[in-house]
Image (cartoon, rainbow, N blue to C red):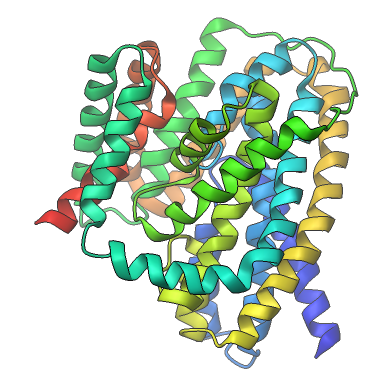
Length: 397
């Protein structure tokens, strides 16, 4: 059995590397497919193997998905905040350093998760018992906090309202399968790619320089550790919002913020497994897939998951650093506009495959909305109103 677990661990890391590198291919899509296969073609396999695969894939994804976010400007919803500081370093020839900062943050998060997993199960259970009846009001407080952080508060309110209305419409299209794929990819992915094509961005040669880590990075890690559990308990709250909350605690600089983003991304994923065990809440596609396959996991499975997080996290760190070095050496030689166009075409094909013609229409509308919202010069995380507002309405009514 140990050999099989190691095999599925390696396969999961490879799958997570693939989903992290390819814009629009999210682990949620793989998770849905695995749930279907676990009850049909692969029903003879032990559920532990699926848990191993899903966990290692999810953790690897949280490491690698900053590469397209920083190099292509095509993030998923967990890494959209890395565009600004990451792109700023990329244009200075420091894209490799930017990715390493997120990788160091994710690696630190892996060790934090293992250390605090046991006490977290008790704390999350107590916290959830208190907040479960006031979830919509907490989400409203998050929105108000996002607005408070903006200089132009009216534009922030407008962006949250506009994307919230779009999310409400799209999520209620019963004939649309996988609605989040075209909605979120359009708002956060293809919109940025089209802007980069319009601006005819050129990437300078990149330096292969490692960041110097010192005690100043302790504060961002502390902020991420405090903020990440909220995302595991509050529906509609993603890594981006958790990172903003964490940054308000730590007051990190640009490099510290990238470190915080990496830590938050991995912590949110890890806490989703802890929350599944502690309060039966599923806040990520990976946790949903495990619950569908296994039900509520016993404590032995949680111990296994923590071990898998540790091992896959360490391996994914080295994979990420090697991939970052590879792309850094070649990014300036590649036609950036052609890569962006090819990425948009691939995303469109992916959306059509999963969501059909209606999905392409949603992708086009979401992309146009994303471009318009970006032009208003507010934080892109305000566009997460597309999930926050529908969630609030569901809980209130």
